[in-house]
Image 1: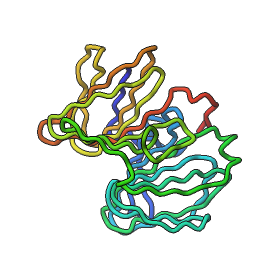
Image 2: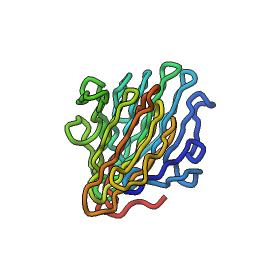
Image 3: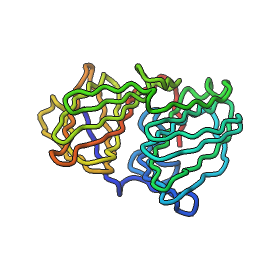
Image 4: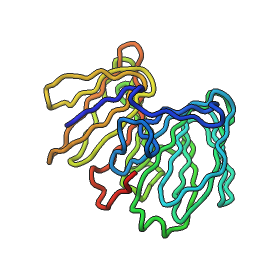
Length: 259
């Protein structure tokens, strides 16, 4: 198991609406500064904060699958399909852009915090499908709590969001001092952002010991072996640790777009 940790200053940055909405981009737009160009079919990942009410005007998308996950606050979505919806804390908006759609976003409260994540399905197939928009509230997602750890499944598995892209997404919340293990299958990758607190990550079997995790760190974990490997996460004794994590294949089985 190979673990790479990238601090906030190694990641990209961006801003919209005159700086009212500021982003930390773990995976940036093409030709922008970033330590990680992509993680398999995970193509773009921005974590944004609204310093004031802010808007991003209508703009087009095609073929990609776009997930907006709201950490807290209120996000409004409108699109060329006729959708006009809002989603709040813990909810998600999903655009499967297909043959093409335009949309706009508005962050209706100062302090709104959310993520926009782009996935790349098989583009030559997805571009032939009609575009769709779907929305999910926090209460629709399965949540499991055990031993000081809360696991919310956002994409894949038992979660209501099912993409054409092979992807799973989780929201993990570790109380202070809690530990959590995650089994990563062969030829899979796990990317995650530490959005609260601090702690450590460790490949359970390699004997190299824990690596420190700090607030805003972006981490990419890859299992190149033929057997499952276990990632051990531990929260700081005082602060706890909250992580948004996405698992994708190393090779999705189709050619990926080159940025």
